[in-house]
Amino acid sequence: MLKEFRASHRNIRGVLLKFVFKSACWDFHMDEKILQEIMTKDDEHWLNILNRHGIKQKIILRTCNRVEIYFIETGEEVIFTEPGATIYRGNDALLHLFSVAAGLESMSVGEQEILRQVKEAYENSIKLGMIGKEISIIFRKAISVGKEIRQKTAISHGKVSIPAIMIDEIDKNIRDLSRNIAIVGTGKMAASIGKYLVKNKNNNITVYGRNEDAGKELARMLNVSFEKTLDMKHISEKNSVIITATTSKTTLVEKEDIDSMNGKKILVDISNPKNIDTSFINGDIVLINLERASGIMEQNRIKKEQDIVESRKIIEKEIRELQERILETEAEEIISMTYEMARSIMIEESKRYLDEIRKGGDETELLQMMGNSMINKILAPQTFALKDLIRDNKIESLREFLINFENHLRKNIEILSNSFADQPDNQNRRYQTPPLSQKS
Image (cartoon, rainbow, N blue to C red):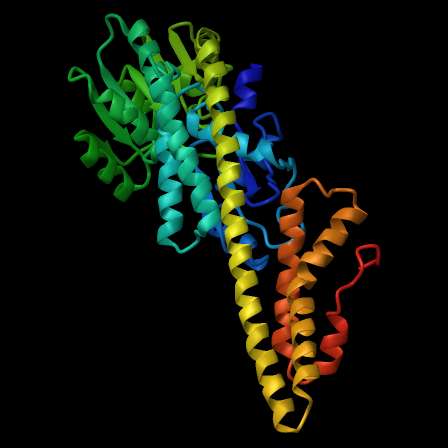
């Protein structure tokens, strides 16, 4: 199997989208049984795992050869433990998402379909209430960059989709054969290649499958015929071209089926895993599969090397701008939290001050105590965050500061809401401004 073919078949990728990015993926060279098991798990399976870990923001991107899970994690615990997991962090994860949307991670570089699939995955998560501000900003930007790259470069020019390449290969080999074409399968892959086939009015197309409802629906959409059967002898007798496009775990067209076929036939396999046995000896049979197409796609990739370079430059520029925007958003939220906390402290301290005045306390002394208490409590989160940075020698990292600041801020708000009224003296002592040299 060619290297490019293997590298382009990643099958599950979870990504943490906030300050740190994590993902897990399975490559096509992994054990096929594990691969099949992963591909057959539905979205509900992955959502259940994410929900158990309290993940609220998540997007599942599913295509015929990949399932990717993008999410904002709530902690540092491991989410996925499936075999073959690979972790992506920081710019690597952003770079992956943007490259996917641009078609750079596709088996056929520059394909258009993946951008539509990224957009649909995003919109589906919106409908399911699984989208928040952070992940929304990132995905909208990725979709926008995918469009921009296709407009500014020639990355998507020519035959870039797998169905288009497969059909081009069929046309090169069909010659004097009849254009009776069988599509075996009723899912997304079958629909994808069917849309290309119906553009040629000379094609006589029949959809074959076990699922009658799905088969009739696909046939209706393509305006072609449907037969509820997977009898390969029957299918091969009626058609010159047989295209398998299913997710079947078992081989549909066995060696014996192929060797017993009469006359020239074109067999096309776009299934994952493979549906057509490659060990046949019938010399009249032309086999077109993903391995054969990968050579064509590699040639296309070489021709578009400059476009790939230009695309990556655009992605890197847009990622820098995106990070600035996310940082600004995070800073605005933290500043808003600071003002909210300060207002709460002011209200509570004012109540305490008035209570003490009514009890006969000295106004000047109480006013000074109230001012000191307010200052210490408001500045405590910043102080502890700065101490953490100094201790870890990361004072130059604004992002690290914001993370620490937010964590301390949230802790401070929780403490104030839970115990301020009951333990005023303890709170005063706790929030006296700690020296920066003191350990937190």
